[in-house]
Image 1 (cartoon, chains in turn blue, orange):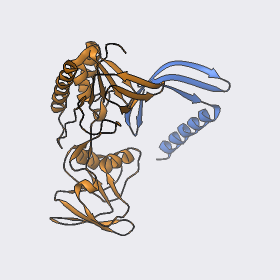
Image 2 (cartoon, rainbow over the protein chains, first blue to last red; image 1 turned 120 degrees about the vertical axis):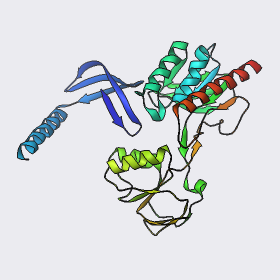
Image 3 (cartoon, rainbow over the protein chains, first blue to last red; image 1 turned 90 degrees about the vertical axis):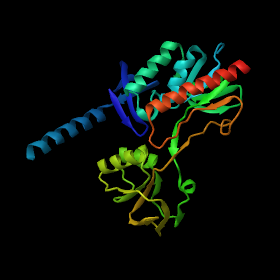
Image 4 (cartoon, rainbow over the protein chains, first blue to last red; image 1 turned 135 degrees about the vertical axis):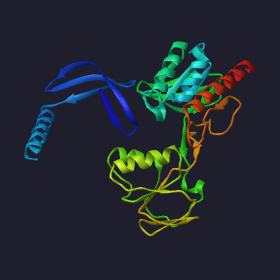
Length: 61
Length: 243
């Protein structure tokens, strides 16, 4: 996985995954930095909505 | 930290080449969590030199910012707190930046919209353009990169070949006066010449235990940067032997 940022492109390597309450926590390394991505129900809904919007846009073109 | 003798600030091509030469005697610190500097972590030269440095036994502390140097100890800060590196010599291989307005002696008004190419590029990468028709001063690597990134972000940059003399504009840039004419523009991107970045406190001016490895040709070449890294390693070894 690769993250594009103002300090350049950085590799993101997933090292683990766990559940914390209602959130999914993706553990990883952003280069040498220990990092984590927390995904909540709202994020899943937002991503799903963006995907649906994308498909609709393509179909109406 | 016993056995560590040379601290290197910067894990770009120069710093890595220096570390590969020094091997176990080297400790590299870089504020970015990957090697490569402006080339990026996945450039062939970066991968080759990172492997060479690691194989030679150099220690790489990435994602840690060098703060101060007192002639015997480099203090760096990162995710795990403060790191103190005892060293006989410090090699500064922290890269370079384009010259600023004062260094280029560009006179005139002080409106918004006069920025360094580094800032213009970072903003363009996030989709923000410094102007619709920015004038780019300079013709080196940063000028080419700013031109490409600003175009990609939707701007229509103007490359300025003459020497920039003055900026005109009240709240916003309106014109750039050059020695070969006047350029109508709404921003000025400074990308001419390079000066070394020296932001480690205590290592700003030349010192007996500090080696500067910052090649500044306006058209930077990987081979030049590598050569500078090897030269710095030799200079650091000379300091170690004299200590």
